Every structure is written in structure tokens, then in C-alpha cells.
Image (cartoon, rainbow, N blue to C red; front, side, top):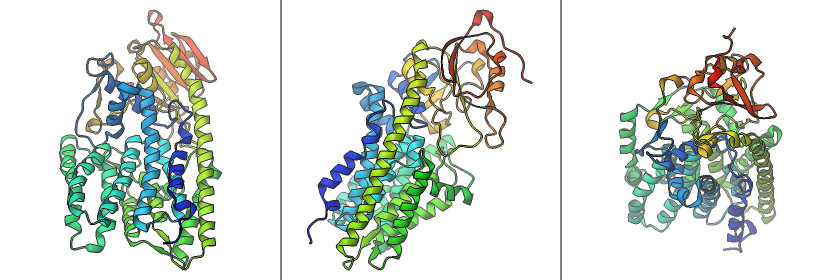
Length: 505
């Protein structure tokens, strides 16, 4: 073999894995849209059934395919504390994604092709910024599991592989059911060349299907539409690394597409068959998958980063490609990786500064308060999401206050909400999201005026307004302001002078 190029060395792989963690080092809480809501659930989990939150919430372990970070935080939380444990798991997820990508490339190609470098920024994808942490952890594990599958197959350790992949498949299913399904697609693509034995070889991945049947039988979890909204699916492709700056993100997509197009059309490259087949299977899943799958919103969108990743991983230089061309592709891919890391670091730092300012309200919320929050939402999302919809979850996590941002997912989550009837309608997501005016794009959301007018004030102690739309001051009658910054404000409901305020017009 020829000497290793710089991007093929272990030193580069180690540096890439470490560099991928940099954007998450500064924020105390990774500023991801849904993560504060998950933190609230983790607090209930760590406090236990007899904890101070047991009057409102109950966390009961069950065989649900959506427990990846829950299990990790259950192990690390008592040692590190809740927030450091969650931060550590999110950082580990990104690093495992990058490590798994590089490992797959090495197992398939023997060395890391230059195109692989461009796949590394996909660890910070649109689903990541949404905060789908259980799914992302499952996918990070699935990538590394696929690399292990390839390694054991290359060494012809088929019996050992069959034995170890039964617990591996179960673990990934518990992390997130879609991660397990994606592992199945990866493996199917790798094994399809030996079609006579493919079913037998896939058997070690099958046991979680039994848990899936039991889970669905008990909860009715399953698929809902829409299925074939092509404009939305094209939008997901364009949004694969969507974060803050639309121009940067769109140029990044153009770079990814250009590298793929160049690689697919270049006579000096070839497509590795196993990864090419896996790419086609994931592409078919993306096309056929509905918006919602087993209580997982944006199910089809979540596949897009791994579609790009497989496409880039499949590219391989033929022996005739010159060293100069290889180095040029590697240089472009490295530049892309570094620009995305710098941009993501800056973006998360800006979101963190915004969160810190707003979260100063927590210092004025007593432990155990009955808190209702209203977060201003827009009719349709701009390119840069405000990432505030579940910020109230940190009041549950840090102040053990009631928060109306938790999800009611039936059997899709071990967390259940049980509150007095007086809280009905203001006990769970999406009651915390409010609009300035009615919106056909968000038919389930109330306006802020409607929410304040119908709020059962006797059931709550405090009202937290986060990035609220303009409000009629009369709606705040019977409340005392205790904190404000910018447009945000925290009000204490004065139960001695309880007033429902004027009726809505």
C-alpha cells in the first residue's frame, strides 16, 4: 500500500472527533429547541416516584423505543448532576457520529476517502438543532454498530457477529426505534449481494421487532400522514444543515451536492456497492416515510443527513486519480468541515447568550411553583428558529416547578402528566405556544389574548411570558410583575385579588 495521506491518518481522525465537540463546549445547556423539555422529564426521572414532582408527573420505566438519553442520564445524572450529564451525552452523540462515519469509511475502503471529510459536519444537522436527542444518539450508535458489523464480516467472524448483535440491536431499539430501523437498512444494503443468505444474516437484528409489536399493541402508536408532500420533502433536502444563517446553510448544501455530483459523474471515481445499496434503501425510506412515525415528528426529515452521509461515504477514488486531485478534494472537504464548525460554534454561542438572558427569570420562581408559560410563536417558521418553545422545561428541571410544555405521547413516553381538572387545557404541549393572531398554519395554537382570557388562574401561581407578542395590558389585571427583561416578563398571580380579566373580543 502507498503511504498514508494526511486525511487517512489516525491523528486526523482523532483531531476530527475532538474538533466536532467544540461548538458544544461553551453553552451550559446545549441550546437545542426540544432539549429543555427533555431536561424536565429527566428531572422527574431522577427524583423518583416519591419526589417533589410526583403530584403532577409520574415516570415509569417501560419497553419503549425512545429511551436513549433517558438511560444515559439515569446512569450519569446522580454522579455529574442533571445539566452536566445531559451536556456530556449530547457531546458524546456528536463525537460518536463523527467517529462512526470515519470507521465505516475505513472498514469499507481500507482508508478514508477525501469525500468522507465533507460528511463530518452532518453531525450538526437540522434534526440535531431541533433537539431530537434520543434519535440522534440511536443513529450515532447505529453508525458505529454498522462499522462493527462490517469489521466482523471482513474477518469472517459470522457466529460472533450473530451473537453480539442481538444485544446491540436491542440497545439501539431502546435508544430509538428509527435508529434500529436505519441500522437494518444499512446492514441490508451491505448484505444484499449474497441474497441467498441475507435473511439469515439479518436475524440477529430481528428480536426488537417483538418489542415493537408489544409496544404498538399496548399503545396504538404507529404511522400518520402526510406521506407524499413533495414540496416538504424537497425542503428537507435543502434544510439538511439548517441552523441560523440561511446563506451559509444554502451554500453548504450546494457544496455537498456539488461533491456528490462530481463524485458520481467523475470517471476516476466509483461507488462502493454496499454503501450505494444502503444509500438507495435510505432514499426509498425517505420518499415513502410519512411525516410522523411511532410518535416521532419529522420522521422523514430525520433521514436526510444520513442520506447525504451514505452518498459521500460511497465515493471511492479509482487508482487512476492523481494525487493532486485527491488532495484538492480533501482540501475542499476540510475547508467545508472547518467553516461549518466555526459557524455552528458561533451560532450556538449566540443562542446560549439569548437563553441565559431569558433564564434569569428562574431566580424569581420559587421551588415547586405552579407555573404556566406562554412562548410567542410565529405563523410559519423563519429559517432561523428562535428555539424557545420548550424553554419553560428548565423551570421544571431547575426549580421543580410545574411546566405546561411537556409532551403527552401516550405509550410513546414513560412520563405521564396527572394534574387537577382545573389545569385542563394548560397542562401540556402545545399550550405554551401562543400567537399574535389566529394562523391557518398553526391551527392548534391559541393567541396570547385567548390564552390569558381563558387561563384558570386559581390553578397557577406564576405566568412566564417568553418572547410574547403585543398584549392588551388589561389581560394582566390581577397579576404582579416580579421580573422583566426585554420583552420577557414573569408575573405572580394575586389570588387575593383574583380577576379573570376582560372577556376576549
